[in-house]
Length: 145
Image 1 (cartoon, one colour):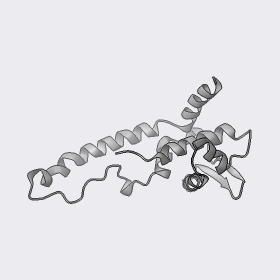
Image 2: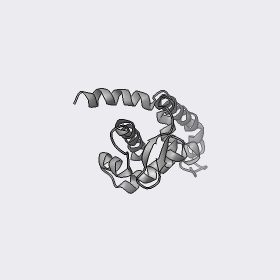
Image 3: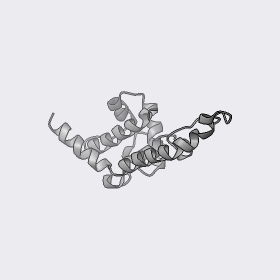
Image 4: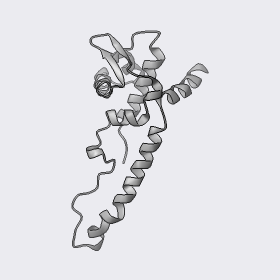
C-alpha cells in the first residue's frame, strides 16, 4: 500500500504558496517548476485544494493564496482534499473471500477492527500536524541555506 504522490505534492505546493507569497505571484507554472511536474498536475491539485477551502485561486495568471490560517490546516485536511480514498477507507479489502475456506470465511472478522485502528492512528497523527508546523521546519532549513 502506498499513498499517492498527490499528498506530498499538495504539501509542497502549500509550502511554496506561503514561502513565495510576498515575493512574486504564485502561479501554477511557478509551483510546477518547484515540484518539477507539468503545470496541469498543479492546476488539478489546486482545484481540489480550493474545493476543500484550503486555497484561493484567481483565474488566469492571478495566482494562488492560502484561504485560511496555516494553523487551521492539518495534514489530514490536505490528505482528505487530494486523495481519492473510496468510502473513507484506506485499506481495500478483497471482496469475495472463499466462504468454504475457514480462513476466507473469517478473515474479515480477524482483520477489519485492526485495519480500522491502523487507519485511525494514522488520521490522528495527521490531525496533529499543521501546515504552520511544516512551515516552521521549512523556514529553518531554507533559512540556513
